[in-house]
Image (cartoon, rainbow, N blue to C red):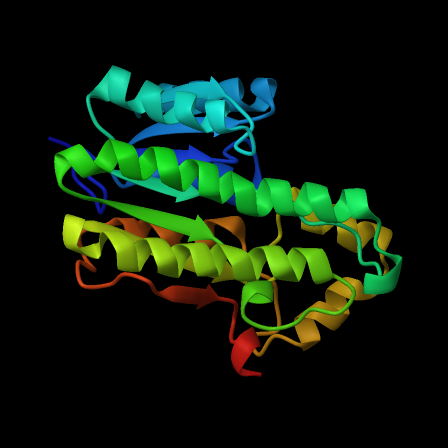
Length: 254
């Protein structure tokens, strides 16, 4: 038997090919989990799976877009087919977007952000919960954002989508608590994922401005968000459900 915070648990990670998702795959594996990884970018997904297996972890990969219900179903089905169960899931897949004033935002931008960030979580929850119910429980963590707790200027669709993720989290937590399924969310502050680093590079001065708004004076590393998700997925917090955990260096309290 392996040891660790997630020892012998089968955990699905969506959006696993980079950033917080890739960090989560590594942290969860280190903590003893069997990981099932899904993302849209096959080359990166396969490389990550190989890296984890070379390090002695057990990992499976399936290419998929969580905004497509069938793809979300295939990822959950793979976990159950290969390992007999699904103990937990980190619904991390999501997108951001460039800053644009609300009245100038194009319809297709709104539609894409809501489809990926909200419908994607919706699709995952439906399939994950269906797989967990026969086993009498499980744990799910959805990745929201501090933008799900406070307003962020010139990012209305993103803010709306991350508020919606929190709404889905609380609704599912309430509905399935008696069936032993815990549903929580993390709300990361600015995190140094590839997307964020690229955005900083294209917008000089924004990294310094963002850091100045965070009491700790820096952005998070992806692993720091993954560590919080690992704890929420573990058996260390059995009475915690419907909670949104800011991992933001104090941003929402500033």
